[in-house]
Length: 161
Image 1 (cartoon, rainbow, N blue to C red):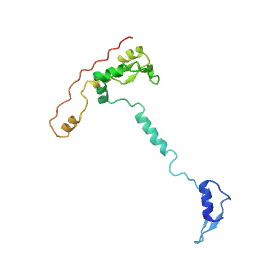
Image 2: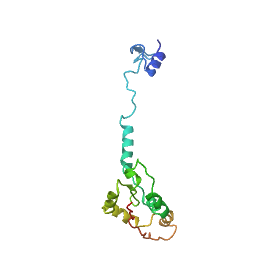
Image 3: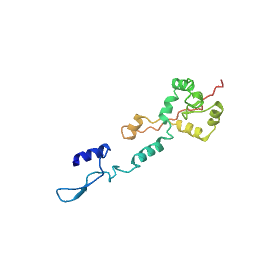
Image 4: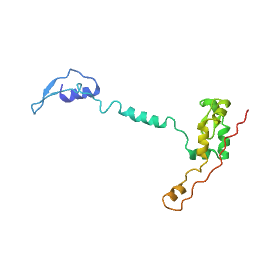
């Protein structure tokens, strides 16, 4: 068996004979198989580090404020508050907080949520007009600065069915 055949067998994972020492034309000894070397390239955890850090960044990802402002429009709010039953979501998608973009298991937990610090903080954040492209251009010197306006935001009404 020549050297090329042995290397082909090693690549396919089927060695026919144990590794042997062969003298090269330069006079150095070399093994005919790479079975003594590890084929692993790089760190074992290199791919895990990327995915874990990505998971940490996106684990508790919530909607951005401009997306929630879009949801607060009457036509979108009506659609979100009157969703069809979805068994994959908490409370079958029947108890939804528009401001926090969260589903709740039942009406009682939704009403308790309205009294929490998290919900009140989100309401306060939503009272500022969302950031727009025009505001970005004004901040870059393409116009005079106009401070963001206040938007009237109130906690949604909950209807007992």
